Length: 591
Image (cartoon, rainbow, N blue to C red; front, top):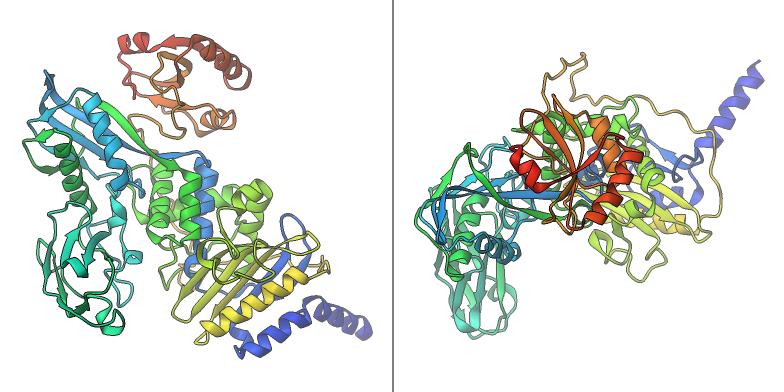
């Protein structure tokens, strides 16, 4: 009996012993093993584990937590989702004059920026508006996030990575001041009267390096209108310097930029900025859509964009539990979505704000690997490409340039003081894909940790073994910062918006033919809408006495009838063809 027990213990030790290449990398780093969590296995549903060290120990994830946020967004909304910003008018429009207000309803598109303004202005003009006698009204009520400009996470509160979310986001809440020393020029990149710049720079004829190469910036945001002071000596030989800082409210920046863009195209605005909820009776002019969620998720992961991740978390909260959305709703939504799709099991990581700029966010290497495996099995390379590609782009563009790892690793990194993490996928030379998570929470977690991680990933590229298939089942996880008692369920009702934006409109969005797939007394069930998503049918939900689900529009009747056949075969046999005119007569509000 004793011999059997001893044999079992020896076999267990062999199973969980680290490969010599990984042991050597850890030993050379000088980082204590207790500060390191490693979990490496064949990617996907395989149970073959290559290496496991402290895999169930709770760690601070930093930005690798974005994997959970972005993957939940893809699961819930799909790669093709596009964020809407809806423009309305209120008042009488006669002879090009809008005797009333231009209204903008923000749904949290984090990508809205200066480059979108020409299209927005042209569509306002296309609606026949040449003058606005009223105000520009902004509804930012979709998010309930307070009014802080910056998270104040560290000693650089005005840096872009500290920007806080807002439903009416613009230029990622970043104000850019352009300094051209040889012309003695200091200008704002975007017309914005919501902050003031004082130029006290002294130009000197010295080489552009050291203390003469960059302006000294002092920011006073204690006043209603923040002030920026540019001080110090700067070389006349320096080229253009762009100072990017979080200074003001994004809805104010958007208002001033939109007003200036309208003015440039001859559209005058008589009123001013007003903040209020969308008033009853407002008429939709058009909807501006963001780029696809696939591009937004890729930017979030590759550039580790904190603001995008915060907005994704809030959007999921709104889609699951209704607006106005809070961070608490967003956290719950991410966990519920991942769990419902088998990515978390019974685990309960603490996601906090969804971006990783947090000391309370917690996860284990095994849980993170489980999420990555789920994504790999479901979406494969399409998902992997949203992560940074070794030696090519994102946060590991330079890290693996010129090495054997280039184009063989798809990773998300995470860095805070005393935190250096990396997680994703590695393709070995023999063509096998591995899920790899290496978390380091240590006072040595900087260059030493990065070098160790790079060594392990390089070793994995050369790895020819198969690992062990006797992996232990991960334990349920509840971080110490979470309450141990069963939380009370949130009694939240799904939002019933004026229209559903789950799928973008087709290219012929100005068409007159629609397919009515159903009419419901209550808001349509998610299971019904999921059928439309799986069939890749662009739909919208129009409220009234009943909720109508419409597919389309289509410009040509032939295309509409082809789509109708698809709807009847895969979604609802009772679907029928209708037109914009008929829907208008029935009082449907289309946009």
